Image (cartoon, rainbow over all chains, first blue to last red; front, side, top):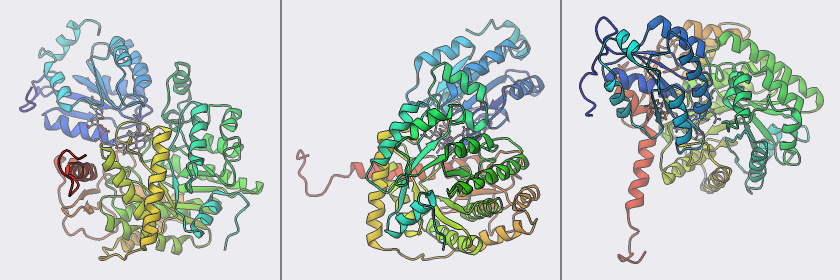
Length: 164
Length: 432
Ligand code: B12
């Protein structure tokens, strides 16, 4: 993955540009991570809606219904990412309208530095499509986004089985 | 002159200053009560002039007690101490025999609606906390600024009333930090002074004004000097001191670099006449620091401060108008209303205060800043703030912003890796 060139569109927006809903979790006030990701995603040719810090899960779900993004990217660095992520994904996957939308989480997820493989696996089992611990590069997120199916979002959603 | 009760946060800092010591303080908070207690004990034993810190966790800050319970029940370690959720007996057992007139303890949080927290602090008899209606709202939440101003007014009044019990309640404004980075000095100064004025209006008579180390030592020294001048002008009728925060933005990754940055913060604090310094550790860029890392940083900072103390202070070569700019902002805000809280609310509504890159819905969001070629933090655009024309209003691109965000980290990491590679002179190869 070279990281250059426009990202392949997933086709949900009329103009074919991929749309990412970017958000933090309810307990996390950090915003520079969101500012950074917004810039990097936009630079990669992706349209971003940034919900900011301390987003209540209900507001995130409303924004998903309202905007129907191709992907949801959750970023959190305050060290509560594992418990907050676990709760968030439960609600996200329980709701029919967001059940099959791809969603990833990344950042400084715990308070102990080194990423916790056990907890990461748990987040994936509960429904995240990918987890990006602190040492992962933006390029990894970009290649994940590029790897998403290029079918129309609607078709993509109905074809995807329950998240692993 | 103010007379302090036998044991008070303000009094402790004052007497340390009189004996020529900078008080150094950790940022420290653990969710396990035993760990929190051990942390306070180790800090107290560090052998340097210090005060203890209890930093609260993010769930308490956001008032999400349900999520907090869930996490505790699941055995998750939090990023701070949940003072509201624990029964007071638990917190009292953490403090028992550690907290004393020789070792004051401050509660630091980051909560826009802090009444529960101040209730707990007051019930426990603690006398020091931190925050402010703006500085604990905009960087920490999406709570409407107006709600935060009202809640902070009530909380301050409640806290101030504890003086009836013979304590001198102290609140430190976090206005000198805001988002941790890229807020130019004049705005930081204005915000912390305005919050000091707000605290006084709600009955507090002992406050501290803060300033976080930014990107350029001389600019920081000018700012700190200006802050003391503004404190004298606006708060001379109450007890106040200035406190420096070691760099609050993206921290260097390498240990040597992190330590160099901390030493520079200690030097700044001493030269700028501050009485207290909040330290950071080499773990900053990576994770919550351990107790041992905190203690090491306290000693390192105290040693660095002592060295500067002997060297004496040096003047500022070039004044850049930080004092004038901060003064203009403060005056413009105070004109908006008798009540400082009302004035602060109106100021943000009208764009007279505008924090660069702050995503909070009540921040005007027009101001921009950057680090220039010489390392000084500057305005790129001031929005509607009454601080005159910026000579070179400029467009800030994404890569400009990233360069500014990582300026300090890169500068120190680069220098440290360079120094680590240079062999000491006069040593033969193979000798080390
Ligand atoms: C600035 C800062 C603040 C500011 C934030 C202002 C704001 N509104 O944004 C202030 C001072 C207010 C603040 C407050 C707090 N902070 Co803070 N903060 C920082 C600091 C110094 C810099 C963060 C920063 O600007 N980073 C720049 C951005 C661009 O990078 P980043 O956030 O690191 O994200 C990178 C990666 O993680 C990754 N990434 C992030 N998300 C995602 C998502 C995906 C999908 C992918 C692929 C990648 C990715 O990409 C980014 C670029 O590499 C860091 C330490 C550091 N890094 O030096 C601590 C730090 C993040 N804070 C921390 C904490 C704990 C807090 C507090 C809870 C206070 C406390 N207990 O100490 C509160 C937050 C309260 C709350 N409700 O959450 C801890 C987190 C500990 C942990 N996870 O182990 C840190 C690491 C400091 C520390 N060592 O203790 N903080």
